Image (cartoon, rainbow, N blue to C red):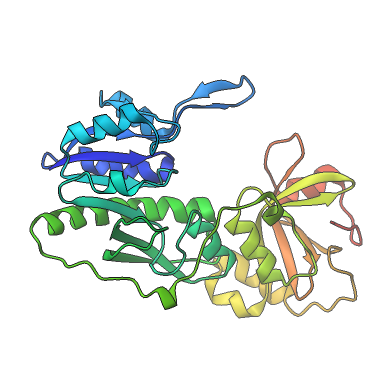
Length: 330
């Protein structure tokens, strides 16, 4: 099978590598986003997908707008590919492009469709406190993740998973599901299933304001926001920005989902009554970090990143800043 692969971030790498590991699949070219300037040196950096393709000496095409790039459109047409495979490419494909491959254009989407259509399904399913998600392969159409579904694979979401953890697990799941989808499609072993639009939900692009923490929310809502938008959620402490990277909601309702060493903490602190205001430090938990009062319940800070510094454990943050009960995070 002759394939052109569209993908950009680390999430797409396992799918590309899986295709390259099978002789039945001939990846004749890779389409990825243009190199971006990153880091302190502001140097042009290739996408993870480009790095893999270059190492394997596969042609790489990087149009800034694939729908309008005449050269790329001509190359895609001349390729006479059986499939276009798309995994987190980052641009919308026109109907002209979708019509080019002989057997179809297949998308590897990071949710159980029709739930969480859109650009950030992993982040929003964590934000919303889902306990299960997965991968859907689908035949692409001109809509935003509206195409007919092919195969699905599921994975549980654990209480302490963050967006990086879940993306890594889903990327591997997606790689396996994609190859199975291609084999079954080529042999006509599966029939596409239309999505029920009435069941659809959406996962829009994440905006900067989504990172701001409001301590009047419940502990579990803040925990889900922090892990969903990891590593970017930000509070203010002593007039300086403080990223909150990892937390634990100190609530007995979540006891079975916690590691054994955390369960005793919940026993000790879940019933701690407090007249503190949201954002105030209620307790210093030795060896771990500060417990913060929220609108409902306590939230334990396990990992943070002060402005201009490296990430550090909650306990290092307590000791390094000599935190005291009663101080406030805004």
